[in-house]
Image 1 (cartoon, rainbow, N blue to C red):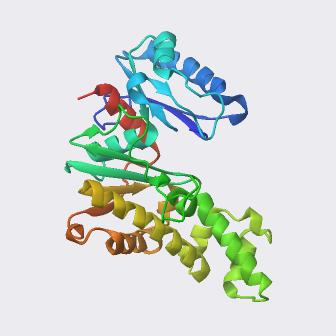
Image 2 (image 1 turned 180 degrees about the horizontal axis):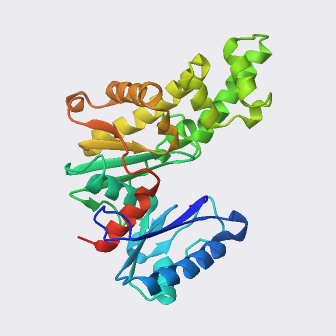
Length: 310
């Protein structure tokens, strides 16, 4: 991804890692910088352990069956890059390429909140919104250029631009932008409320520095304006999940990512309400929406499961 690089060694069965490395990504060095990190740490891990296979959870669109990265929306230098072939050459092990949300879905379906269900849809809500669909313990759509991209659904017939998406409304940056616009509108109207004062303290008086994390903390503390912004975002996301459920009738929807960490009252309760409003009525009692269980290492667990290939 655009923030961190994680490399793990394990059995691919959800058990503890044999070895684990976490490195920060320097976007200014582009894809080549990340590949240099993979080469250095990967060779060390291969030398220290009996590695049989490798797999990726890449943060961006891929051609998984071809082992080729399409692009990265965060880091330059990945366009049409043959990552599987490069890894096999550099590390000397057979390699499978997966998308980060797809392999996270595989991990949650097998070892996390979705275990025991035959159909699991995973949604991550953070800087962006991604999705992955697992049917009978297998990732759906690996032979396609994209699949299960719930964040790129366009809510409403007026959303004619590819930038008017569920992600643009409900991901972290969308929540922050909408909140700042709302604050500016209230101030232009000459209003001064306790909520406005609370936000001003949280960002040092500069609303442009207001983060989604700070908005979430304000919502938890009782800031009604912050809660309203989360309610608006979860309604759009709930609409998107309802469309997904209506089409594929997944048994379990697992939701993870930083935006979801504000908890049940602020995030999951209004999300479930919105899904119930928009889903096909016969399915209203036929699914569960659950918080993710595997935390920050979910993609690594999923990549290992993909490499294992059971």
